Length: 113
Length: 109
Image (tube, rainbow over all chains, first blue to last red; front, side, top):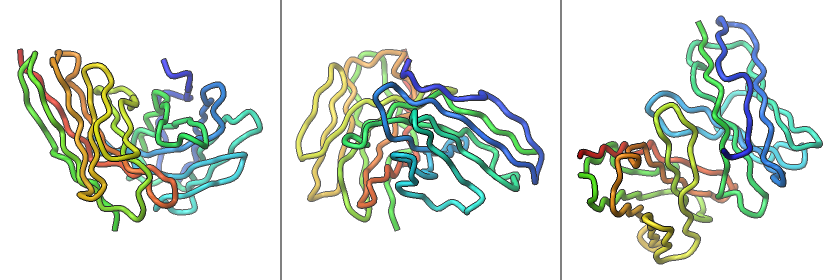
């Protein structure tokens, strides 16, 4: 157990809808990263939050947005869902000093129909 | 562009030793990490190399050569529970983790 929790575990949405995924980071970790992992692929970096500010972003469109709260928990919001958004969404927490060492939650499996 | 190359699949026998290689091309380099992911599970941190050389953690070791943009993960005394996907990941100049596509390790009894 890493101490990182994500909710919900599974979600089914239809194309065009919006979704919010949630993540609680491990105690003492102030940095949260979000990843999208398609089946059989490595995680793709979406963005990272530190001190409630976006601190780096991967190659994802603006309809992917996020928030970090004062308690370091975080949300990932995806608007105008597309079929290709179907994937496992992973949240990872770390300290700012050791961002190489990330602790992952179990993920949210999103299916877009 | 940025890329990490690792074999898609490796097969080994229980009790043996296996090496998983990773070559990288990234904008900046701030360390090579290795993660393990079982089917249906989340990635789990295994090892990190910030400097050249070998890091050992129990049955797992990881090696880095920055001049060759190359590293490997060495798994010894393989156990059936080691069957999983293994990912190398590089922290780039933006301090983001860039991941390889993963190596599926199949262990036969």
